[in-house]
Image (cartoon, rainbow, N blue to C red):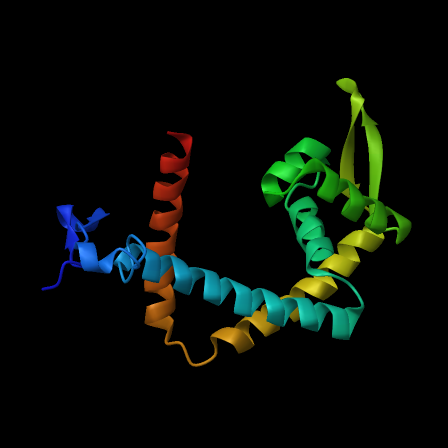
Length: 173
């Protein structure tokens, strides 16, 4: 084993020898390899979906994401709830919501409980558009994952669900 072997049960890199100071901490660690692979998979999938939405529907992945979040909340969401659900800033959500309003896909109404905020919800046209986009999205994701055995998909879903929960707990600390 080299000085780059993980110590402390894989939690931190072992000490570097003086002749290896030019190698970054954690180089080759399981944590960094996992992180890079997760990012690579996400980027490949996102690029594929962005291109397909643009080419086939002249829309964007962020618009689809907003429609999906609103479809899951039939009573609508406050803008702050929408940005939290999508993990993006209020400013980014505002731009996308305005684009969707211009297309007649969403409507914003003053929140009766707090007149300083608005509730955004799908219009019937927006719901129909989302269902059309969701069907295509499902097919494209299927194309991306074609050839991955079902048992591996199930294992990945379980493992990544656990990882997400652990990461969320660690983020709150």
